[in-house]
Image 1 (cartoon, helix red, strand yellow):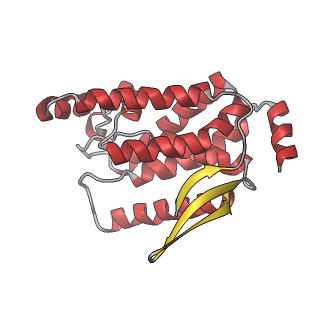
Image 2 (tube, one colour):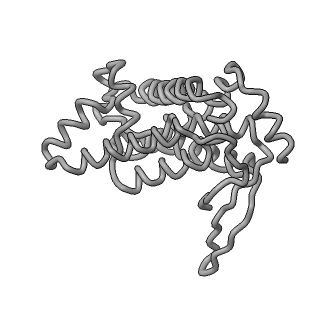
Length: 221
């Protein structure tokens, strides 16, 4: 299933969400301008390598990506879910929420593989936090979703709660499977996704939301 867009309108321009997307894209374009050796050094310098933990790398790792599909997938999900969460938190709190979710995501992945020398990179954990918050605050929203069935492609509006729970279950079992197979190489940081999602669900409960936007969303439903 491929989510395309949600059905909830934004009540204000999602400046922070757009800014995050632009920042990620620009940094990735810079990555692509580097030769292979320099790129490798850049990723090891600014990605989070668990066996040489650094708080600065926790932040910088959230803005690095390993390829076009990695970048596009992350930015697409941020665009779908980020605007509405930004609406109810406001710009400053939303940015803080995003960075805290990303930090929690990286810390969970480091805790699972503390001796790994493979850099953890990507905005996935922070965006997973946004998705977790979206599920808590907008469970009844509808997500227009592309569903391929063999050679047939169909589009369905699916409740956000269902599609996000489905996504989380995939991350969870993939993460458990990566431990069971003793996989220590590169690949997807599944537990960063899990940690970010759960952190987002918890953090949104303690962050003040803007009531006027919540009332508008309630009326829209």
